[in-house]
Length: 354
Image (cartoon, rainbow, N blue to C red):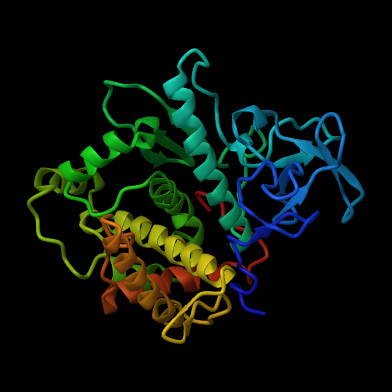
């Protein structure tokens, strides 16, 4: 079995009536059963009827599960009823929550959390470990979702802390920034996938024997980061995009090139999984989740992206995936893919510093 077998990341159903269900669904639209996502099984399941609190029985280990404490804010994930945990594995990654007296902040936080759950689910499917930061795991992962209107943008990653400016959840604000920076694509889940790429760089590349290959493909990550980013923003909106990079921002520094490429790797896998789950094909091209190489994955993705962009144009919408995957970019995507596949053969996950 290859790493990507069974990656139907967008195919869920109500196990009471068999009707399709959305990943984030809390109720079946057909039979009205209460639904919850079970992280350990990576499925959406119907909760026990008339249970209080809303719960279900996990036959795999005999445990009772109930809703995450953040269910009132849209989280449909389940947690073990015993053990003292109140928040699901996704919500535990977030430090704090905006003031409930700020409806705009809460709405933005809920949207960001929904995208974060999609990210955590995908990382779980790929087998990339997520360790919650704690006293016992100081190098673990944590998210700070901040809402500070009027303050400079804070989105970024540092030492396992992923910060997201919740203004990015506002479509108007985000689109204004996209135009200002001359970007063709800017989404909340795109930010999250990019920043998680930074988190995994040392673990998948920096502490491995593949650092030389990385530098050949992406450049030397030891180049001054501060100067490189300052230079990028000084030319944002004016510089011509280089086809050797997936985006203009990817050309700012090798570590940003890695993070942008990692994000697009997750984009493509997730979209291919969705197409496969819905049994779609374009001109005989099937998005086979068990494809062994990145070339096969990209070959399946290209006609789908072209078709989706054409459909978007017919509806008067911007392209859904406005990127050109040059041979150089595919080589970089293949490097990311190989590092993720390599990880499954290792006994342990590298720490942040080795």
